[in-house]
Each structure stands twice: as structure tokens, then as C-alpha cells.
Length: 341
Ligand SMILES: Nc1nc2c(ncn2[C@@H]2O[C@H](COP(=O)(O)OP(=O)(O)OP(=O)(O)O)[C@@H](O)[C@H]2O)c(=O)[nH]1
Ligand SMILES: [Zn+2]
Image 1 (cartoon, rainbow, N blue to C red):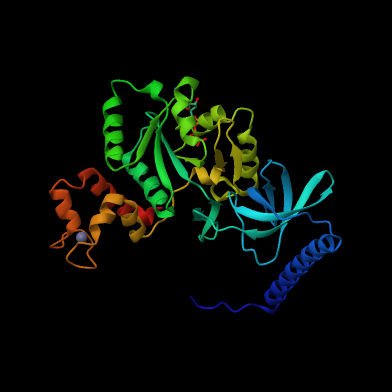
Image 2 (spheres, helix red, strand yellow):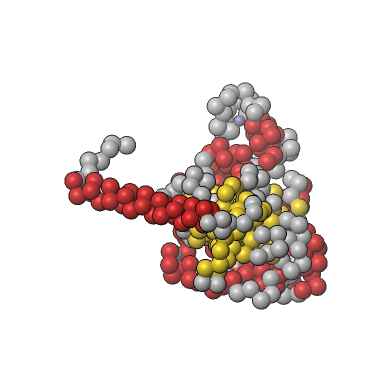
């Protein structure tokens, strides 16, 4: 890309912004140093980042006491779900403060594009992605595959959660059974529930216990209803609404961690719920189809496009019935639509 020449005024403005940034950072360090020198910081404590606000994070200790924490310089960017070492500080205006000293290594990262189209982590240490589908709105296999591709590329285990089983009837049961068979054959775990029937949620609650989960899926499948049933008393809509007016729904990335009363944690934000519906590279798409990924290395040509090339291992596997035609055409369809998203 050609470098744009900046006007004098632009250069001056950028320099001023950088100066202000540096001053703010200095001020922050000075405040931390002040507390340190005064011996006001407590012992190093293990914490969990449950929310993120610009330059500060909300951290919870093992007793679930919350602290508004400053970050030491050079920590990099923290996200909800990060495990940290922090030192409690003083109480200021009724808020317990602290300083994050270290971030522990992440087991996983959920990433998505920011408004500048850079893929950035928005949450860490997620164990499972619950991909919610339902009889209504119609569960398109191709859309399910897109979410699965995104989950596979983050190396986080996806589970398929069929909600609204009270709406299963003669018209849709065959389609749903086909889908569920297809994905369980590929090794994806499937759970079936109805957000409107608390008695159907036992297995799901047990599954969520001891894990950090996110709920994703198409609008209208019942993510909010499920979360409201699993997290009684938390008004998640308020967060979503204020984020809506502040930044616009599609760019929202702030995420919050909640504890399910029955055990396990949820990380949620409007941005996370839309997880997976963005541009991916061709290699990512292939990688995201777990059964294709395993075969693709055996094509005769290293740069095989899996179209009509002789010795294409994927096409052979489809012909032999090892790979399902439905999944192979879904893979092709996602490649075709890459440029549309
Ligand atoms: N019959 C039935 N309806 C349900 C069930 N779960 C949710 N619904 C209904 O489905 C509609 C959509 O539910 P939401 O929870 O708003 O869906 P969502 O996935 O959060 O949708 P977005 O907020 O647009 O992403 C609502 O009218 C719910 O009452 C269920 O188990 N059975
Ligand atoms: Zn091939």
C-alpha cells in the first residue's frame, strides 16, 4: 500500500495524541507506584478477569470478591476469561481497586475481527462453544458448518445444542434427525433441550458444570431464553442494549463472565453470539471441516483445488462414500460465498 503523505496539521495532531497517551500511561504508573511505595498493595493473588473496561479490568478473586484493576505496563491486552496474578489495593469511592501484575498463559482464545478487520482475541480460556440450533428458524446445514469451521479454527470444542424440542413435529423431524446424525457421526456431541421446559435442562446443566462456555447461533434460536433460564436474576439485555447504542451491534466485542448457579461459567456479549459469521481464508475453511482436513494431504498435487484434478483425495473419498456429499458441497458453498461476507 502506498504511504499517504500527512499534512503538517495531521502530523501535529498525531504527535499530540501520542503525547497525551504517554502522559496518561505515566500518570497510571505513577499512581501504581504511589500505592506500592506506600505499602498499600496486598499480596499477590490469583484472579479471573470477568469484564474489560478500556484501560481497566474487573477481576474476581477465588472468594468472588471483585476488584477494579489497573494493568502494569507491557502486559499486552487482557480479555475476559484471562487468569491473572494481581495485588489488591485500596478502596476508592466504595470500589475495591487492584493492580494486575501478570497474565497466565491462555488455554484457548476466541477471536473475531475488530472494526478495523484485524482478528483479535475477545475472550480467553473457553472450553466449549455451544452452537444453538432449533426447528425454527430453519436449521441450515451450511450455516451450522460455518459456525463449526470458526470453532475448529479457534481450537475450541463445539457442541450442537438443539433447542425448542417442543417444536419438533412431523414436518421437521426428518430434517433434524438427518442433521443430528450427520454431526454425531463426525464426533460432535449433541444435546437436546427446550428453554421453555426447565425439566429438559438437567443434562445441559451437568455438562456446563466446571467449564467455561459461550452460546452462539443464528438469531431467534433461543440463546437469550436459554441463558435467562440458566442464569436467573441476571439481566443480560441491559448490557446488550447499552452496547447497542454506544457502538453498533456488529462491532461490539466487550464480553462479561457470569457464574451459572448450577456450576460452570458463561462468557457472553452480543459480539460473541455472532461468532463465526465473518470472512475466513480458504485454508481455514478446509481446516474447519474435520473429516476433509484429515484427507486433504493425500491429493496427488500439493496445490490441489479439489475441483477436477486427477488424484484428488477429497473427490475420491466422496465417491467412495467416506466423506458425505452434503458436507463436501457445503464446503464448496462456503468457499463460493467467502467473497460475499
Ligand atoms: N417453543 C419454544 N420457543 C422458544 C424456546 N426457546 C426460545 N423460544 C422462543 O424463540 C424466540 C427467540 O428466542 P430468543 O431467546 O430471543 O433467541 P436468540 O437466539 O437470543 O435471538 P437473538 O437475540 O436475536 O440472537 C422467542 O420468542 C422465545 O420465546 C423453546 O425452547 N421453545
Ligand atoms: Zn484435492
